[in-house]
View 1 (tube, rainbow, N blue to C red):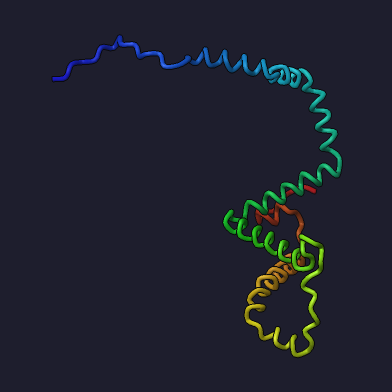
View 2 (cartoon, one colour):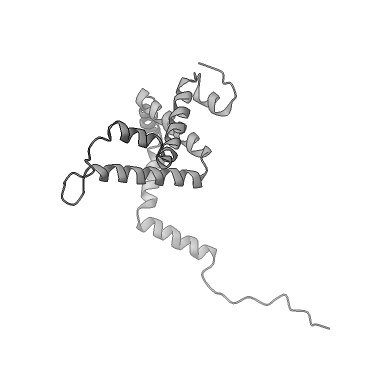
Length: 167
């Protein structure tokens, strides 16, 4: 049968122990001024709190915080792959639109053709590729318009579907 391993075997030391690591961390924090900064923050706690409260109690600050929270709520509902797709489509659209009217190298104007005329407009109306490109824009405009027409009491209530109490 197998022999029992003795309980009094000490494993070899392969690095600093927890106390040595803690001392090294403390020394590093001291050398970089983090401990002094933390001590100053704790000592000035009431002053810092007063400054923060005064700054956040202004209407502009409250609006900014609420607007950022609304943006976070919206971004939380968009899957990253869809957001990526839309953002890079917007980037490409902006790039193409800005390079259409001006050539970046010499500033010469390009894309200045004659107006299509009545027969050209008629041909554009039957251009499947053009309609395929315009359909997402029309759907987006329609959804945007419909959303603007919806009355909203409170953003949180609208987002969660739960009524809130208070003013």
